Amino acid sequence: MALYKNPKYVNSDNSDAFDKIHEPGSKPPFSGIYKCMGCGHEIVAEEAREFPPQNHRQHTPQQGKIRWKLIVFAEHKSTNL
Image 1: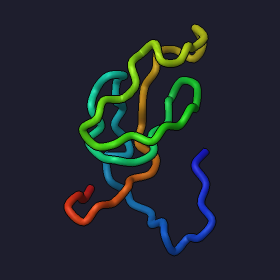
Image 2: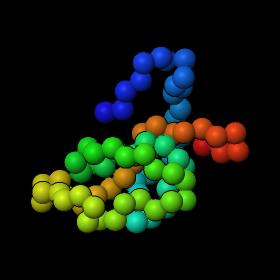
Image 3: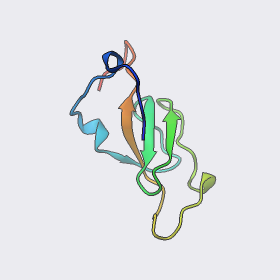
Image 4: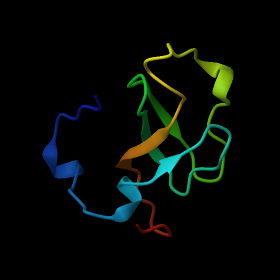
């Protein structure tokens, strides 16, 4: 789970961008922290740079396939949700 110390640097948002699931090898629409919905592993992903491929991490059959979900959006002056 992503952590933070100072709440003045983090805001809450109800954007649909946090609900979308992304496949391995696809390009994230936003920079930020993404969590695998199968195993809970978190990564930092940069906008338009491909997510790790399916085989970068092994899942058990119970975890299913790798599926990335945005959990923390890294705001840039030129990028908004």
